[in-house]
Amino acid sequence: MSTRARFLPVQLATLVEIAPDDSGWTWETKYDGYRLEAVVRRGAATLYTRNGNDWTDRFPTIAAAFADITAASAVIDGEVVILSARSANFRKLQDFLGGDQSLRPVYFAFDLLELDGRDLRGLPLAARRVQLDRLLKGATGDVRIGQRLRGAPATLLARVCAQGREGIIGKRLDATYHAGRDSSWIKLKCGKRQEFVILGYTAPKNSRSGFGSLLLGVHDATGLRYAGRVGSGFSDALLRSMHRTLESLAVAKAPTIHFPERPPRGVHWVRPKLVAEVSFSEWTASGSLRHPVFIGLRQDKPAHHIQKEVAAMTRSPAATTHRRQAKPDSGTTVAGVEISHPDRIVYPEAGITKLELARFLERFAPLMLPHVGNRPLSLVRCPEGIAEECFFQKHWTGKLPDSLTSVAITQSDRAKHPYVVVRDARGLVTLAQWGVMEIHPWGARADAPERPDRILFDLDPGPGVSWDDVRSATFGLRSLLDELGLDSWVKTSGGKGLHIMVPIARTATWKEVASFAQAVAVHMATHFPDRFIAKASKAARRGVIFVDWLRNTRGATAVGTWSPRARVEAGVSVPISWRALASIASGNQHTLPTLQDAPLPRSDPWRAVLESRQRLTKAMRKQIDV
Image 1: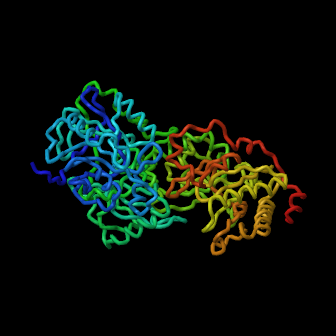
Image 2: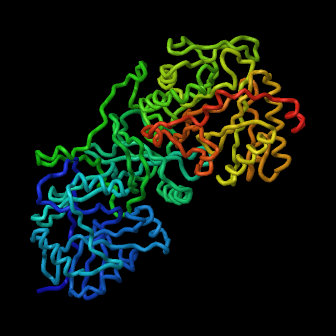
Image 3: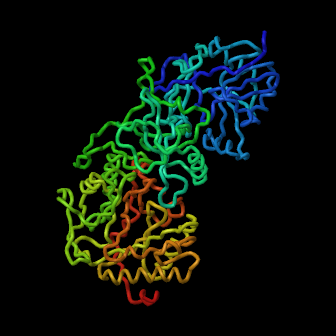
């Protein structure tokens, strides 16, 4: 009998929503790695991808580990992973392939297709497993036997999801091995996750490097179909390295793509050759992704094979107890406001829809209104979402909806112009309906717009400033305010920096407040010139933090407490305690995707802001030479 082993086409699992409840199945962890088939002959192993590409040189330690196999030849099916804590980590696997030799890949074998020249594919899985166990008995090094799970599939799925794993695989014990996708192998995932073809990319915004987001697509009967964008999940190093790869695939004209609406603007198109693996929460009605997060590039899967993955239903009627429950559709009316175009993606990279933005504002209204309600508002509006045109609007034009009120304020032209004022959750949701993405309240209330009651310092880090430096500088400014006898509160900006708020009694004028804020900023810049700057010049900001005191001039504003930002990351400006600042990782740590389903805070860390009645005294002014 011939002992010549060769690559054999692999079997694939079918995605399902319902797990079968009969006992004829065995369950395994769904590994987060690359599928590899090991073809072993006379102590030498060749490693093939699922498409038959030779990847032996990419995993030399795995190939060498098969040298200990006693069989003359074997074909073993399995997956190579990088273990991280309790689970596999696909991103670290990519780091290894990128040259990080500190990482150690591990191969988990889960099937035996051929042994000593004998084709085992016609045997039941249970029989193949017995021979695989004998072949790899006691293996614990770079090659191991894949773990088999015990228990009900619903319980197993809940367990692996809690451990941060991708899902579980079910296989019929009596089934033979069939190349291609087969119903005898099924997969249940913890969340939605699949591969997409990369169609192009957008330019980066603000301080981001490389690119802003990737445009994604899938193949269907008509060709390539647009599936949305992904802009989160990238490190700075990955943004730069991927940008170089994308530039090498650049084309002057967009590929032939079917768009459900008009094509996005400002896109750099590429040849549709690269495949990205992306996790997401669900598909929208228009066929785009919600809450997408980039996982990694798939080098083992050709782009022309990538299609939308649709879950099949198993035939077991009793399995309905394992069906994943979809969130009930609560309609498109939020806080009594009808939301038009509810499925419009207003944050493409985060996958947030207009309806989700409205629901966020309704949910956080009790926390938000004490700080932005009953104040004149300036607004950042993006009617089509942040990927299209956005503009800053101070004065409301046209008819005002009955859910909003306004206050007339005299401007530089000596005429009075209306500023929007919100009183309740209905008003906040109305702003979302009108395309408002950022809410900027005045530092004064609508009943006395000429008497400010808040001083705000925006700590804006320049290029080269680390987050630790921003945090340390914020504590430093707080110390100065403490010395002056002023209590202060802190919040994230939803962007790169932090905001310090000083509430005051309504006794000072705008000119007096602005003069005091400027003096504080100049004081910090004078005493710590290597850390702070008090001038707005962008050219001079490298390596230092701009203490933006200009937010305290009449008519100037800063983003409001609990307001989203019109930025790629969908950051939210969140009030925090001074104690919590030590554990905050960035100014945009809190985002719409992370907050919209999170429990509401038990208490408002800015509650005391509403009760403070501090005054700017002559002693304070003298202390900082105002």
